[in-house]
Image 1 (cartoon, rainbow, N blue to C red):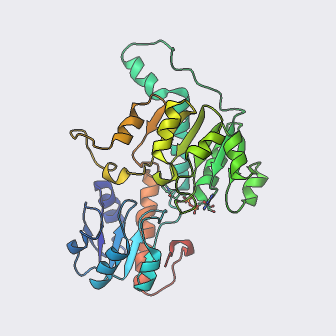
Image 2 (image 1 turned 180 degrees about the vertical axis):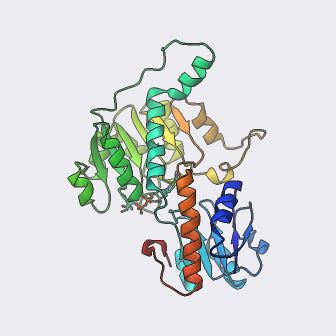
Length: 332
Ligand code: NAI
């Protein structure tokens, strides 16, 4: 059976090739993203494997189904970029990798907090220039601060567990409170309370109609002055234009983003010789208190291993008509 991979990078190919032997699939890699203009690339594929910025809308899925595709495998946890209703109507099976390494993303969120706070990125460059002065590097103790976590699923839970070691007060908001975290001392509160009381807010909920632009002018007005906002989830959780205004007025004291609303035109590419046309990202990167990483929170050896293994196993199980071992992996 042949699987077509879209939006692939050399590391995707390495890890999938590495773990494919027991399955014996034919793997065909395209570096181009999947959308309604690129479905023509594939032929005689039963499965298509896509990533975060591929567009599996109804028209694209229809074209894939017409070409005989039966399985769409997302090699990521989020599934905001696929029309599941259309997939169901077309009889396509859709799977994802629900939890490949929640710790990888949680640890990256923490790395962003510590970098923004203690300015280790600036210190590194300064010392290399033999500038040993401390002016401008002043941070704050994490100990005793209030951290608000929006979304306490796999990643939010891992994040809470790590940050508790810093002696922070933990607030959380989710549609369903997590009893295990409550027993660890995490307090589940209404979103408004979390926004008002947190020194640092870390977003770990999926992008849905309810969460789109969760950080906007109105919600920012509720936050503490100088709040730190961390988004390792999906770019659409933040209204970028409002956040730029919040940074200019110093309402937001620090912003760490691993995801960006218009990231599909930028991330996972080397654009160092290009003229970037996206003025919002350029404005964001011009602030000294903004840290942007290019959707790398998942990027650990352990996570890539798990992504390859789970994806191949799920495709194999669906191909054989079996139930998925990992129940949460099946979306349709
Ligand atoms: P999960 O499904 O385990 O947890 C999501 C949690 O968000 C659930 O507890 C759910 O109840 C909650 N939630 C849903 N709607 C909500 C709302 N309106 N308000 C508050 N909470 C809400 O997902 P997981 O694995 O923790 O991943 C979270 C997100 O992280 C994914 O949806 C994905 O977008 C993002 N992600 C980013 C990565 C990166 O490399 N930057 C890698 C992996 C995931």
